[in-house]
Image 1 (cartoon, helix red, strand yellow):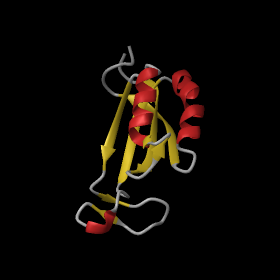
Image 2 (spheres, helix red, strand yellow):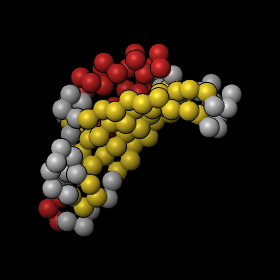
Image 3 (cartoon, helix red, strand yellow):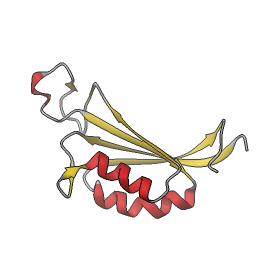
Length: 109
């Protein structure tokens, strides 16, 4: 079904973020998998910043677990609406962006 509509969510974290003592990005990824979200990935940045803080790079010895991590997932509007409340709880202090997207290729089946 070319040009079908979907929703893409991007969550901006950093390496030091935790959920119940575990890395937040893996907790979120496992939650999304358990909720049967269609596609999700975690991207580990080599450089970036969050919340107007100074730029961190993988070349800095003092990056200290503060490198950005980005989680992106895509699913139907209904499914995203169902998982977002838990994600907002898990990443309460981080930026979550939701946007409508067009599937140029593939489908959510």
